[in-house]
Length: 283
Image (cartoon, rainbow, N blue to C red; front, side, top):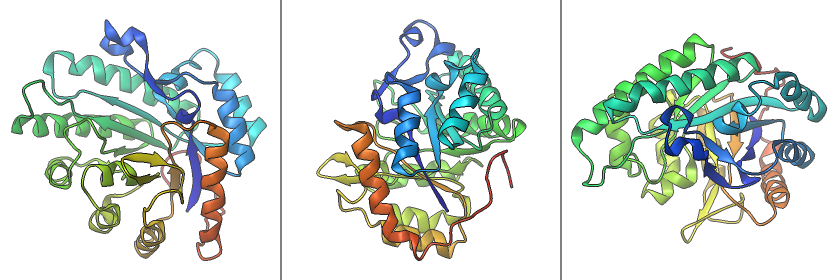
């Protein structure tokens, strides 16, 4: 296991405004400085990072600058987070085109994981057929990711049709994509993240940690999540990939990263960290 951090805390979670009128340009975006985020992540002691698709695509014509940042801050590019509605046939091809362009750039720049969230909630409520549509779209995303030597995982998220435990179970029966459990989103949706990790251990290729308490996402150790139990379960399943800490917002992003990194030191003595590099896709 190795520990990384998401860059989205620097600027918060927003979206690219072009997506309002152009689905193919509807990216996640953090408004802060990617360079500043990578500097602070490295200084906090993390070894890798995940980035939003919109922030990654800002480097489409500045690839050498991106690579230089990796070298400057001695960080590995763990993965990129993207998403879509996935249940509306009229825009699905546009959404998949966007994700393909993200996967291609991420692969070229050395990423390992493609993380995808989504599954829109209709104004009049969820249709059972929406789960089949989402599953079919995720299967196509998985094939696309594998074409670019990326490991594809679905990330359950509040505000989608996969919040509650029964919704996750329903989807996982219908799709072949791997699962990236976000521990706080799972709890906020009414689930037990440790139970989810135990139940889907054979489908977990990547993990997001964030703490949670009283409806608020928090740095690790500031809420009540049972990370010791989760790490034990991951060890028992021989999990050897990245754990990325994610925090949507924090008054001082650098401080938030440092708090989580200090908390993780309590596990380092008993975790056997992998010394090999994960760079370059599948092992």
